[in-house]
Structure formats: structure tokens, C-alpha cells
Length: 97
Picture 1 (cartoon, helix red, strand yellow):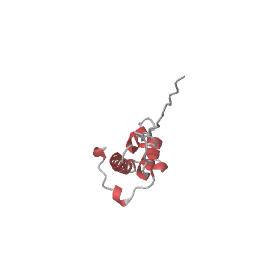
Picture 2 (cartoon, helix red, strand yellow):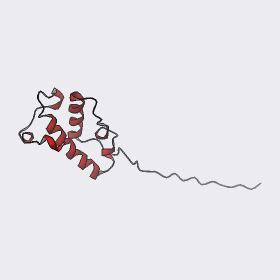
Picture 3 (cartoon, one colour):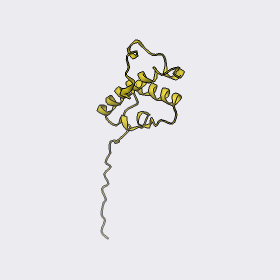
Picture 4 (cartoon, one colour):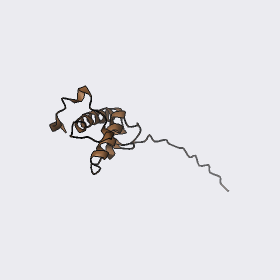
């Protein structure tokens, strides 16, 4: 009887998405947007979304969240989830959205 040994190697694969946590500006944007209009898809900005797959992508998404949150804070009577508009939000151009 011939005995063969089988060598099994485990290869660890790095996850391809959702390896970073959402940034604070994106957490705030998602809460605000969902309170203002829940029909808007914010999944890419949420935990597990495509924004958090790489540092460069996360930085770009964070910038987008900051702009979008500032714009939502400028709508008439924004939801409480949007927080107060800061002095830096006053000049937000809504056409950039």
C-alpha cells in the first residue's frame, strides 16, 4: 500500500472591500440624508460600502460626504440628524451636488 501525504496550504486573502471603517463625516452624512430623504441610496458610504476598500477611496468619499452634508445643512429646516450648519458651511454651492 502506498501512502501519500497531502500538503494543504492555507492562503489568506485580504478582503477586497470594507476593510476600513466609515469616516465620521460619512456617518453624519448618511444619518442626515436618510432623515431628509430615505429614498436616496447611501450604501456606498455606509459600513461595508465601496468607499472603504482602500485609503484613497476612503479619502475621496470623505470629501464627498463633507460637501453633501454641508449642502444638506443649508436646506430650509434640515432634520435634527443633520446637525447645525457651521460657519464653513455658509458658502456651500448646492449646484456642486
